[in-house]
Image 1 (cartoon, rainbow, N blue to C red):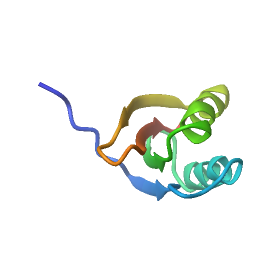
Image 2: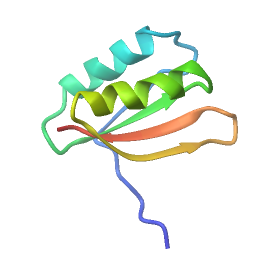
Image 3: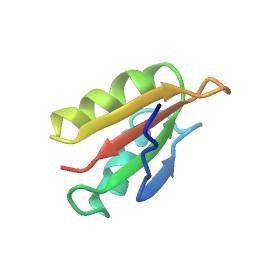
Image 4: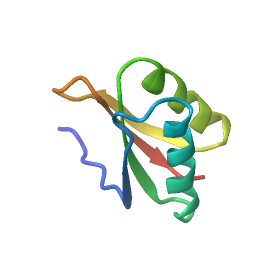
Length: 80
């Protein structure tokens, strides 16, 4: 049984090129309080390759990362 993670906020960064998708993710996280969860939608390729590592380096936790049917990715981040 898979646990469903409920996001407190959502950022759709599909179609947004690097590094702006990371900027939008940071802005989204800045509006949350510690422990809140941000859902980020990212394109395949550089966005999903770069954003999770950057987020983790800033101390946030990646709760899940999975590819959606359209080829984009859903990233669930817990704010530190």
